[in-house]
Image 1 (cartoon, rainbow, N blue to C red):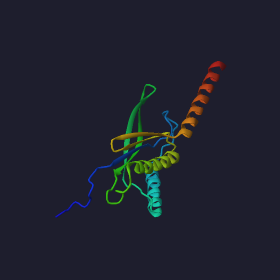
Image 2: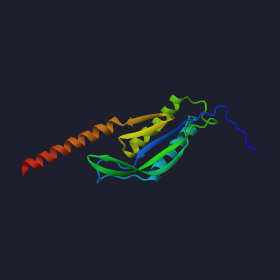
Image 3: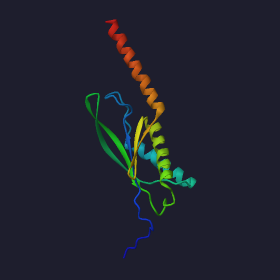
Image 4: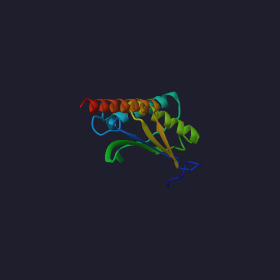
Length: 156
C-alpha cells in the first residue's frame, strides 16, 4: 500500500519555453538542436547539485511554436523544460528562490542559444525574460539593414 510522504501537497510547477532558432526573420537563421539544450541543462543541473545549491530537475520536450510576424505565419522549433518543485528535495526553497534559480538557467540558455526572449511560467505566473544585449544587437542589425536598403534604393 502506498503512503503519502510529503506533508505539503501544494503543486509548484514550472515551464520554460526556449526557441531553437537564432533571430526572428525567416531564413539565414542558425538552428540549435535538442542535444545542445540537453547538454546545457544537464551541465547546469550537475554544477548546482555538486555545489549543494537548489536545482530544479525537469523534462525536456521538443515542440513546434507558431506565431505571426510582419504578416507572415512562422513556425519555429522550440524546447520546453518543465517540471515540478519536489517537496522532498526542494520543499525548503521559496517561490522567489525557485524563480531566481530558473531565471539563472534561462540566462544561461539565452546566452548559449542566442535567444532574445525566454518565457518562464511558474505556478500561475508568466515571466517574459529578455536579454537586453541581444535586443540591442538585433536593433543595430535591423537599422543597418534599413540603411543598406535605402542606399541600394537611392543608387538605382
